[in-house]
Structure formats: C-alpha cells, structure tokens
Image 1: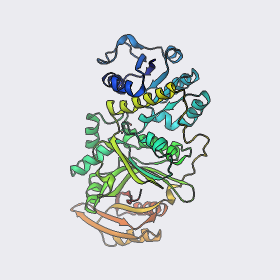
Image 2: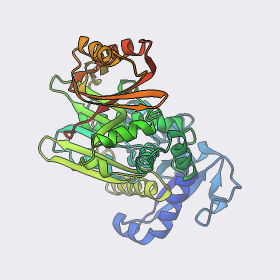
Image 3: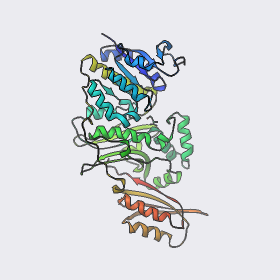
Image 4: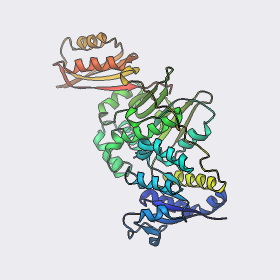
Length: 434
Ligand code: HSE
C-alpha cells in the first residue's frame, strides 16, 4: 500500500505526542487505514533541539515553504498554534492541493469560514477535531454521528484549567482563586497566557466552533457573551454549596424559538445533582440535546500531549481514507453557505441569579436592596445574611427567574449606595435543561 505522507508544522508537546502515537500505534493505525503513515518533514523554529525519542533531527527544517510545496507530502498537520503564521501556512498548503489537519482553535474560530471555503474550492479536506476539547471527539459527533438530528442546545465544560480551578476551590474550602490558578499552572494545565483560560477566551473560541457546527450558522467569536471565572471567590463557593449548588465554567449554546442563538461563556451555579456537576478536575464534558436523540454527553481530557494527539491522528487517518478512496471533501463543513447567526442580546437573557452583596450591617439596608431589585421586577426567592464581626456583612440572595438587563440595572444602583462596601457578585444559575 502506498504511504500517507505527512508534513508536520510545530513540534512542541502536541507534535511530540503525535510522533509518539504514530510510532506506538503504527500497526493498528496501518490496519485501520490500509496504508502506513510516514512523517517526512517537520517544520520547527529550532531544528537542533532535542525532541525526544520519536523525532529524528534530520527530518526537522525551518523551511516551511519547501514543506508546503513538497509534491511528496499528502497532508499538512499544523500544531504550532496562533493565528499567524499558521493561517498563511494552511492556506498555502491547500493552494498546493494538500489536505490539512489542524489543532488550532483560535484560527478555526476566527477564520474558519474562509478556510473551509478555500478547502472546498481547492477540493481538499480541512479537519480540526483537536481544536475543541482535546481528546474528546465532539467535532466528529456533531459533523457525523448527529448529522441526522437537529441540535437544540449544548452545554459544556470546555476549559480544563477553569474547571480545575473551580473544582479545587470547591474541594478545599477557603482556597483562593489565585492559589488555585497557581496550582493549575504548576500542573501544566493553563495556556502560556492563562488569561485566555480564566478570562473565558479559550472557551469562547471553542464554543464558536461548536455552535457553528451544531446550529449550521456562521458564529463569530464576538457573538459569544464571554465572562471569566476570575471574580468567583471562596466565599461565593461556600454560599453556593450551602444552597445546594456547585460553580462550573460553562459554555452554552441554545437555539431559541425565534431563530436566534443564545451563546454564553461564564461561570454558573448548577444544582449539585446535575450531570455536569460531577465533571471535576481538568476534565471536559459536552452535554448535547438533540431534537430526536434527546440528551447525550461526551467527557474526557481536553488537553495533554497524548489525548490531543489521538484526535489529530484520527483526523490524519480519516483524511488518509478520503485520499485513498478519492473522496476528498466527503464531509462538508455545515456552515458552508450558511447565514450568519443572529444572537440574543445578553440583557434579554432570563434566569435565576445568585447575588452576593457586601454591606454594612445597618437598619434599612435590606429594605433598600429589596426595593431596588423590586423596581426592576426582580423577585427574591431565598436569602441568607451572615455577619462577620467588624467585616462587611454578606447578604446572599437567590432570585426567581429575572431578566438580565433588569438585574444589572438594579445592581448598578445598589453598588452606588453608601452602605454597600464592595461591588456585588452576580452569578447566573443554570437549570438542568441544557
Ligand atoms: N488550556 C486549555 C484548557 C487546553 O485548559 O482547557 C487547550 O485548549
């Protein structure tokens, strides 16, 4: 059988994981593909660096253009990350008639629509399973397994670093956000720039990709309402637990009856018996609600050399199968030719809220809080007040379902009261339906 010949761009942690997997699973991969896979060239910035036992330095070059144009290479695999120069490399590879496998979520989220058009025009494949949730095969499920269904909603934990941090804060009462982040970094979970993880940007990119596939509309990253987990404190965690909730970093996509999409990335309280509440540590999970299939969930490791390599190499095998059977472009991207998504404004979103006020314990304060909430038709469902000696008193309220716009207006007025000593913490409560 003729070989499937690869040019690998980037040889960091994921690239080395790919090389290891191709070596260790070579026999079973060849049996499944019907051809061996050979990595012919590797493009890396430093060709002399030691990259472990599966990378021979003589394959490594700095000359990306030579690899992209090499007629003896069938598939370009891009795992260098970042928008530039990866974008140019992928476009040039496709212009040279090569199919591409990439793990680059930022690029697919930001410029995927153009890249899929180019792939279709050039009659090549562009696969990207590893771009979302590392080793969890959610892209394949949305593109292929659920192709006969209509996705109504999806709800995921798709940033492992954020999940690790909130899980640790829940396990260890009093653990601060900063200490939990330092632990996540020391375990190697966080991105080089951890603000992408804890600020929600990483999950925003991933949700834009998932929502595009799930709902068949072009979703831009700027359409995802994105908030990070940085403001979740040990005190919020403790109160959430007292009310029977856990705090999770969620990414939510929902098709509304009026044709708009509800797209949000933010920390949220979920009932501790909800299925996503059990997804702890750095695990990822995506809960999908299909109109016909009903609810289903995928869970696993969203990062790490080998889990990510599993997705990349499975893409190589799929693209290799398409090459062998002359069926390139077999699985078209759902958003090709689709309309841009129309998205619900966050101020129109309705849900229950967790509000934690920090106030001076003086007569009339509670009445003023309740009055300002009432002015915006925000009704209180439950309330706890806890004095802390000389420190500000925490007043925690759970609201009945309320419009986000009204809650924000009320909180803005509350935070301007002289007896309110810290900005109010506002967290959404996400109900069991996805
Ligand atoms: N830093 C990401 C996470 C992994 O924590 O989930 C890669 O997307």
